[in-house]
Amino acid sequence: MTTTPISLTAQVQDNGSTAWALAGELDLDTAMRIEPQLMSATSRRGGDVVVDLAGLTFCDTAGAELFLRLQRRCATDGGRLSLRRVPHRTGRVLRVLGVDRVVRCTSA
Image (cartoon, rainbow, N blue to C red; front, side, top):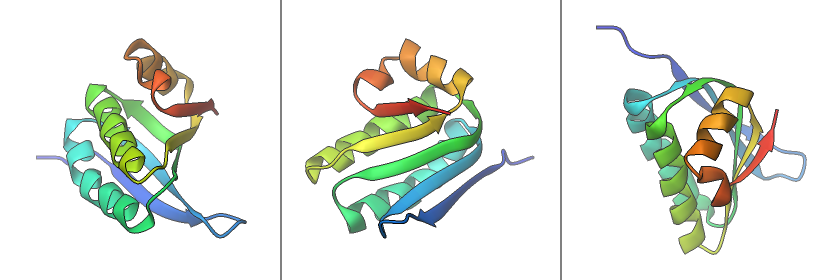
């Protein structure tokens, strides 16, 4: 059995905040693998969360649902999820599913 490649890394920003970078393929398997890390980071931070998707090569409905769950988690702390550097294909998936109406998305 092969495992779909995904990586989640923290990036410290100039203002001292942390952004998360996703790279690889975001599908049912990988979403389940990274969700605990993202949720844990969100609960520790509270408020706004930024996820950089520039390295994302694939995203399906499981990835879109993960972003919606993460947005709900942020909202309970009075914050918001922002997806930045969203690749074109991933952006299309998020638009078709309406995720971009709930989550702030900016293009690559």
